[in-house]
Length: 260
Length: 316
Image (cartoon, rainbow over all chains, first blue to last red; front, side):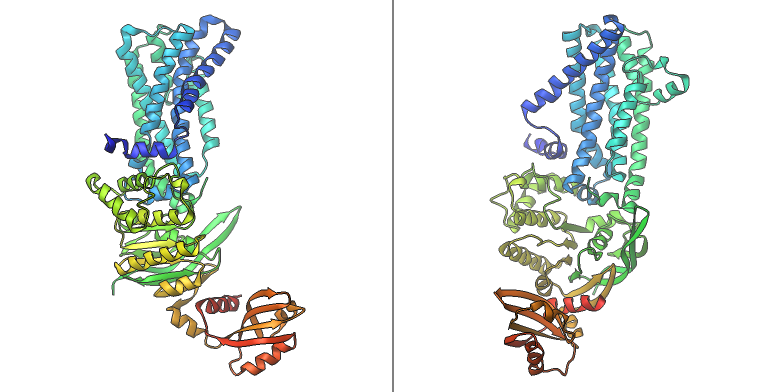
């Protein structure tokens, strides 16, 4: 067990993750998402009435989990630059993609926890009842969405080798995901050419599958899940392919040796 | 003897705000197996950029460099298995980890089998005198302890070539002494070392050969002895003088002041070089006495620091 606890992913978490104590965990992973959902629910109820509440809460549970994963993962890389350890990691013989992937395990677990806890909050606070009879499918959706978002995060982590500060870019992308992925309203309501962009982003199909399972929409869950998984696989493939290119470009530009 | 590093016309420029800065400008040198090779120069001379290129973290814009026959541009993966590096200062550590955890992390990165890690970590921490502090968080460490931890980290993959970029910067004399002893031990173990430092005495003590670098160009290369000898046309003097207007002596054409220190009011200790070989100590006294009372003058043996300052002054 000690060996496992001293593993690379755990040490990465201990070295770089933004919080460690139970108190901080309580605030950031339990209270903060709750406040986010309440805030969104209040706005939605005021604007379109409480009938729309379940729809918007489900979208936000998935989005909030995705946001947590992406931000924490990229923050780890920003911290590496700040501590001057990024170059030590890259200069080691371990494949850079493997380094990045192993660092993603804790943000992945974190995102999964926030996702599942979000679904519980949805039930307790907003009566968005978990479809217990479809629990297997629900967990599968959560896993597939988490995988596709992880793949997007890996893609960003590869980009962060080249750009010493990708925060602005990242904020734009998170904003984009919120608008394009059907978080607050159906992606079908978007103009066709914008919807075609939504269809190649993670989350869009996952949120639709989740809403279908909750009886809020009527799509084919299996087909949506397949698409979400394929999109995740696509981003993962791109991340694997670009990591060498990004590392080479960063060595060329000097970005590897710049601090954030 | 085997050539470990071969550098030919290596150059690196950076573009910033539309301007091109030439950080390294066509340098060439070779380093043989087991040598301690010093790169000395003022801040911004190109030492660290050179090291970043040789450690494969930065690509040259021109020229080529080979480490153990592998090209830094194309064969970084092979090179990384054989080298390691330490950059001076307190960066490069995870303050929240203990030294053992930090070493564990890098053992995994360097693919050290799990069952070997424990004994290796204990051995390396003992080598640098950190056994007692092995389970303390790194953020509680002093600068010297962090530097020693860096040294132990860089030995994880049993490197054949080490790059030490200002490893003793900011250390107290005892810490610096300890680190120098470690470097000497590593050299005895057959590790080739590239060292950059601002401390000339340290370079004199540790380096087999030294290169002076300024404005991205290597201007002089050789052993400390050869470098001192190359400044044979200059002679160094040390004097204690009593002067009311010390700044006037700085304008004296026949001498070039290296250091000046006020001992007590109106009394100064100065070291200076004289280019004219035929000038004797009496003539020097006469020149100094134009500016005040000369208490004491002696001719000094040329140190590496004197040779460095003299050389850098010549370069302008």
